Image (cartoon, rainbow, N blue to C red):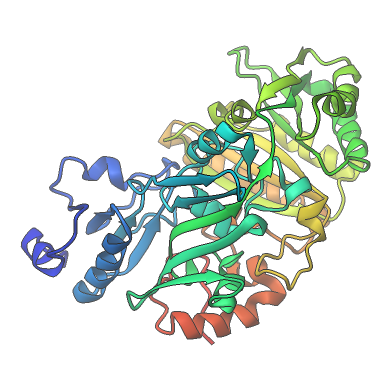
Length: 453
């Protein structure tokens, strides 16, 4: 039975944010996450204004016997930020950001989005590895890994994390860093939200921008085999300053034409970036070329229109052992059968600094050089759900001969078999021991869950 408003008020007398129940006007808006396919209804939403509110929310859930979910940006496609009949701890109002340009660090609260963080750090020509979609939350992306344009040069988002303030399951607030609670710091860098709530995160910053080289080139789908071969071969010799990705998608101009695109960035000197990305402009040639000098903040919002809030989403993703010609042909054939013009097949190339970190250095296991394939099925009509989910699953199944064992935590679908094993791999045993120390009752379990040892 859901708690009444009076029971909630009595249980959390010092809460300064908002405690929303289904009777509140803002409830329906606050319960929704980025993925419109997720339609969960928490018993209570604790919209927090600060760390003390987070502590109150944890204690409130304990008093009322409610399971919890934690919402930062709400971008996780599996919808783990939302929960039915539990308590959603909502960090969205927690937007504090402090940049120290002399120390080249930034400290931000757990409700901050990457576009908000980038805007503040770019005032000083500084940046850290962040999401390629600007509306993604910093906390969830970082704790799960953190793919972004700067990862070949500066590592994953979690590689740039210097410290975090964590609210534990018993309500304590602890600092995790290499010198304080070092085991917890190791675990949160890749272990997701299993160990507590990231109230604030502190990152190292690097000299980037404000103008870098980046953009996209587009080719008709009939050229996709040659385009993706060219993409694969170009990736083999990229410098650390450059990152490339490829996509099969429907042109956004309303024509309905299916296309193959290559998106790229270079975070070094503009003349170096122009030289490195020049072959992308020459190959084909493309039917559309938008590569050139661009503000770093613009680059980080470039893909946002392709992932609109409220669209229905079902994703499958996994690393490929090699982007062979046979794998490319399978991807093209699958995309030719794609039922929705909103869907994409994305190929992310990982190399450089992010791939050179030893597997045991952090909890994250995505440390190989190669290609991560994302089957991002998106649609708008609920009547088309079964058809679009089936397309994603069948496309993923067709890739089986080419798949490597590693999978990216932040892309892991909710119905994946044995998700902890595929996400954490050889680090799972150590993670279970740390889970037993910091969350022995598995209070934070609405995630890719790590069972306490």
